[in-house]
Image 1 (cartoon, rainbow, N blue to C red):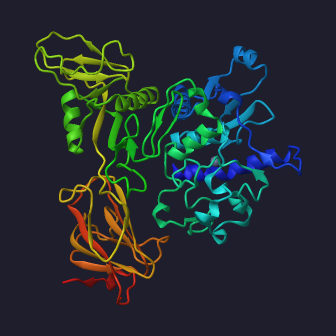
Image 2 (cartoon, rainbow, N blue to C red; image 1 turned 180 degrees about the vertical axis):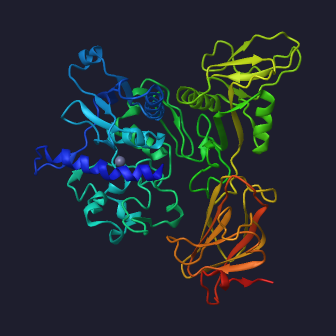
Image 3 (cartoon, rainbow, N blue to C red; image 1 turned 180 degrees about the horizontal axis):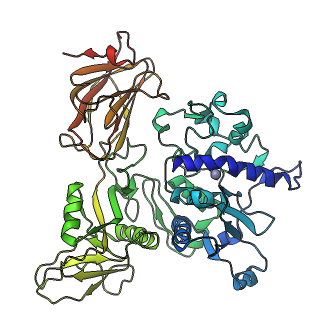
Length: 544
Ligand SMILES: [Zn+2]
C-alpha cells in the first residue's frame, strides 16, 4: 500500500501544480483553499469506468468521511444541479495515477484521478481528503517543529513536494488543530527518497514508524474537517453531549468522536495502555476499534463450528454483540465488506439453549439495534449469521457460505513509548509467557532524560530461529533511531545486556505467519556510568 501511495504522489503534485499554473493568481492575495458550500460534495462515479466492486470501495471511503464529519457526498444528478443552481461536482476517472485537487475549485466540474493502482482504502480516503480541503500534513506551516526533511535524500526536482503552504504563498487555516503524525494525509518516511535514506524523520522517534502507515481517518483529521465545515452548527437545537477524554461533538449525528485510545458513547471508556501506545495496531488484517481487535474475513469458507475453531486458533472468539457502539461500528464494516468482498453473511457468536431467547439483546422497536430472525424450532441449538442488518438464528449445519468475525482484546503489551528512569521497569512481548501472535509488529520506544543512557537486560528470549533472523526477529536500535538496527532471533539475547549510546533505545518485535515462540521479557533502566557500546552483535555483554 505504501509504495503505491507515495509512488503516485509524485504525479499527484505534478498535476496539482501544472493545473495551478494555468490559474490567474492575484499576487497581492494569498491563495486560500476553498470549502464546498454546505459541505455537500456532488460526485460523478461513472459505471463505465469502474467495476461494481471498485465503485463499492470508493463509495465505502466516502461513507468513512461521512461517518466522522458532516460532509455529504451525493451523486451528481440533474435534480442536484437544479437545487445547487450550478454545475459543481468531482468527476472520478481512472488515471494512471492518483490525484485530487485541494478543496473546491473555481473550474467545475473538477477531476479526481483514481486509477486501478489507487484503489486501496487508505489511498481513496487520502484523495477524498484533498477534495474536502486537506493538504498533506508535511505542508503545514508548523511542520518544522515536528519533522525534519532531509533534502539531501530527495531529488532536486522532487524537493518542492516538501514545500510548506507558507513557502508556496498559500493561506492554510489550521483551525487550531495540532500537527498529527497519525494523519491519513501524512507521507511515509521514504516518500520521494532517491536513495535508501529517509526523506522525512520525525522529531519524536516514536512516530517514525507511524507516519504514512495509517489506513483510517485520524481523530485530528476528523476534528479538522468538523471545524472547517462548522459541523457543530447543525447540533444547535440539541442538548449537546459532554464528551470526555478530549472527544468532541460532531460527525453527521452530533455524537462524540473519541480520541484514539478512548471509546464508548461519551468517550468514557479507556483502552488499556492508552498512555503509552503511540499507534493502536492489531495484527496484520485485524482492525483495531475501541480496545478490541477484529478480524472480518470474507475469504474463508467455514461452517459455524469450524469458524469457532478458526477464531480460537487465533486466540480469539467469534464476536458477540456487547454494546450499541460496538454494533454500530461493526455494522458499517460488515456492510463495507459485503459490498467489496465475496460473502453476504458472517458467522457471529450466537448460542441459545433449548427454548431460550437469551441471544436477544437491545430493545424492541429500536431500529438502531439488532433484529433477530429466528426461523428455527424452539428446541434447537442456534448458530448466528449476520448480514450487517439482521441476525439470523440457524441450525448449526455445515453451511460454509459465510465469512466470519473474530474478536479479541487489544494487547497493550505490543510496543508503545516508555519513559525510563533509574528504577527498572519490566516489559514483555504480547501474550508472554504464551507465544507471541503471528503477523505482529510491536515497537517499544524507550526514552530517558537527556544525558542518560538506557540499559536493557533480557531475562527471557525465545524467538523463532532462523540463520539470518529473516522469519520472526527482534530488532534493537542503540545508536541511530532512523537507521535499521541489529536483528536477533532464537535465543540470541537470552541473559544479555544492551546499552544505548544516547537517551533513546528502540526494540521492535516482528513476526510472520508461522512458528512463534514465547517471546521476550526484559527490564529497562537508566545508568550513569557507561561502558563503550556499539550496535554490533559481537558487542553484547553477558549480564550474568
Ligand atoms: Zn496527497
